Amino acid sequence: MTRSPFAPRRLVRYGAGLAVALTIVGATVGPAVLAQTLPVQPAPVQVTTPAQTTSTAPALTVGETLPLTLAVTEGPYFKANSPETTNLVQDGMQGTLLTITGQVLDQNGNPVANALLDFWQANASGAYDNSGYTLRGHQYTDANGYYTVTTVVPGLYPGRTEHIHVKVQAPNSSVLTTQVFFPGVAQNSRDSIYDPSLLLNITSNADGTQSAAFNFVVPTA
Ligand code: FE
Image (cartoon, rainbow, N blue to C red; front, side, top):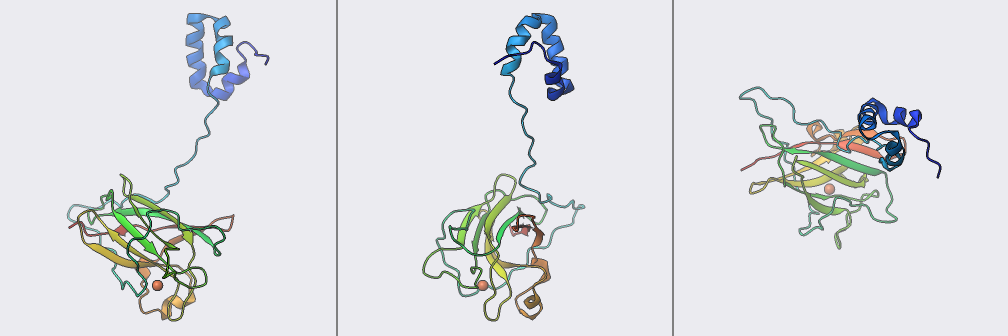
């Protein structure tokens, strides 16, 4: 490979900061050494934005607390001992891919690390897997209280609008059992369990998938 000694274009690519650094190095060790050392500079790193796009806890004034996430019925299809996974999607699964991300917070707006979330839901046709653990899985929030779950948009089943069940539990605290819902579903208004405070904030992506945000506020005692 031909290496150009001290190519100005490379300086431009690496930016002004490195240009200054190279100037300093050049003054110390001379251009001959620079020509050898430049190629081992790491390639420019592609800066990626973090996957977490959910805003952090809202600012609270002194004495103000967040309302707990509304608890709603567990329904008949919860199964204990779900696998620990953040990805409920399996090969060949039908439906619209959906990733839900958010935080678990306490009532003071502080993130809850190591909180348990246990999701279960119907498939895109509205059927639960009651013999196995398809579309069932639990996970724990990270140090900043974040969770993310990849799944599919559930289908309707008789009497119910689209929803995903979840149990959320801060460490050593009581379990909050609830469901999250999808905006714009006609059946929402006819579903007795539906509550607008439990609506996911959905973004439809260009590739046909959906991203959703939802923060849970849970008891910490
Ligand atoms: Fe259900």
